[in-house]
Image (cartoon, rainbow, N blue to C red; front, top):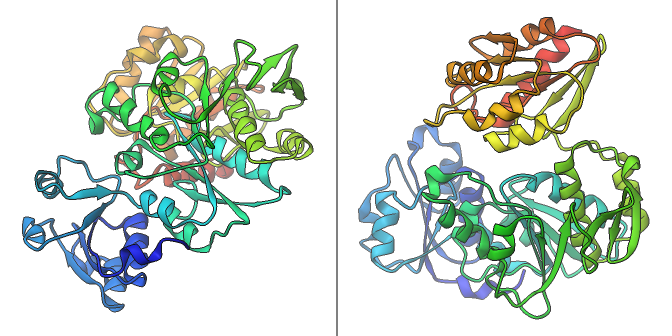
Length: 450
């Protein structure tokens, strides 16, 4: 690690635990900071807080008392999921206290160069592709962030012989001041997380912070087909490397004559790529651009694209049962992600959808639902999705209580040659703790059919 001395003796408040807060608190304590950790979960139910307390960290649990700000604080490390409307955070802002997320620590401490990937959809797939493509290169890639180990934990082991590839969210980027990737990737920008950011403009501004500290020696990989992305990337100091599925961008990654190219070099024929869907072609182009910048071998990129079948819970092929192919897209927590998943298939499709009700309707999904043969809905949004399916003219519609019930019903609605797709268009928190848990339930229920 580098720059470790700058935290010694600092008074730092870590607000919110989960993985990132726990890792940040432990690391800052190790570096000699005077750390207080605050979490809303009561101490007697909070194993992470107990562990931090056992190594000598001051822990205050059960609420976010404003009295934590009575003593001078150098800065706050905030869990990304805690909104800025939280009274403690609001008061800290009024007092002018710097508030960061743990990726700021990772950027400060990492000896390795960073490749950072953000966007509304496709982050995890693109991150995974870049990591796989960079294997066998001169520098060994390490994966970090939402997709793997917390970034500030990876920073502790990263050396100049590594490249840290990290998926970053708008929530994390909002809490950055000096965050500095060598390659910044912005895939796309759609209406998402507006309950947190308020407006699409503010959401975009948060994403654009990925470019804020680029220098003339850095690069930014952007979707040339997304006008909002292009606009957000303006006026930064890095070198632009665009990608496009609709036009040739000679200094970037693009499609030509049914093949993938990077800066004039043919990489692979599209029909040799295993990963399905137009949206995944965008992810592939972005990954190739970032990996090539960082020294990936073309032969390795080709091998990855011929074998990589997707990331778990992101349009993941599960298995085939009696001629029906099952796909797990539990990560589709918004309408756009589900539209993208539906459009990835040409086969007759049975959709499983539903989850947390955030107050929105599903009229935007109707054009895509017109391609769907049948739908099984579940969870809090079940009735709203049924209404949208009726408007779309879907002929086979069933509504059940939960996902476990939905799988055999979907099978009954299907025929040999059909695709059965879990792509919920909703967050999982009405019935599951995480989208991963939801996807695992789907996989388990599919295997029960056998």
